[in-house]
Image (cartoon, rainbow, N blue to C red; front, side, top):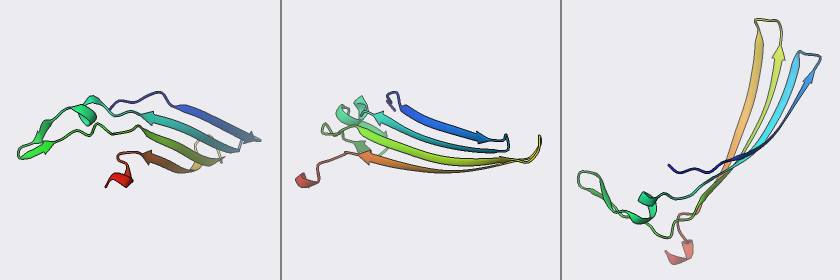
Length: 96
């Protein structure tokens, strides 16, 4: 897999050392590799992988939000939720 650097913006807020809230937004990019766009090969016996020169890059935007509560030095509860929007431009639907 070929990947490019991602970008991230995050924020963390802590109140009275027992509660913490954090948020994060990030983006990522992946361009097609040489196997995807220009190399014919046997991926397994009886199967032939044919490249697609019209492949486009994939983009993702990630979101996460979390909250944590510290009860003592040994007890902490941390809850987080994640969501990703993934855009794959594998083909032009108008040419199908």
